Amino acid sequence: MLIPWEIVVEDSEEARNLVEKLLEVAASDPLILSEIMRGVLHEDPCIKMQAASMVEKVTRVRPLFLTPYRRVLLNEFSKINQSGVRRQVAVLYGRIMWDEWEMKQVVVLLSQWIESQEDEDSVRNSIESLHKLAMQKEWILPKFRECLVKTTEHGNPGISSLANEILHRT
Image (cartoon, rainbow, N blue to C red):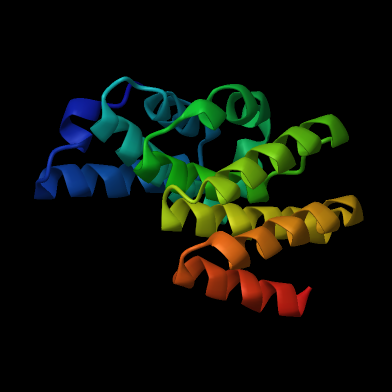
């Protein structure tokens, strides 16, 4: 199924209805998610943003649907610089069961995104994903704490507050 991205990104009732239908279908059919994933890599920033939002929503209820896309997340999504898309993509990294080699790459990536302090929501979502991963693997916890400490020292007030809160819980 090809997704009519030109319609999906429109600001209309028809587009919103189409997105809702696509989300319903994608939550039950991983092949539709495949098309949506392609949209995240589209050259049009509006399509990228809409597709990233759709992937985030579908995988919120079906995180295992991301499993076949581990390499795509590592090799392609990791290079996305559009802040609105990165904000959505950052959440995805905490929803996947990574092997050790991949996990090391993901930890480095999320740490870089946290330390960059470029976009508050991207940083927040990266912290949340790295926290989920740190709860799975003990070896990540020291790196996670290090990121949080740096964030409390150099981050904006909202992010510093979140980092402090998580530091006190871990």
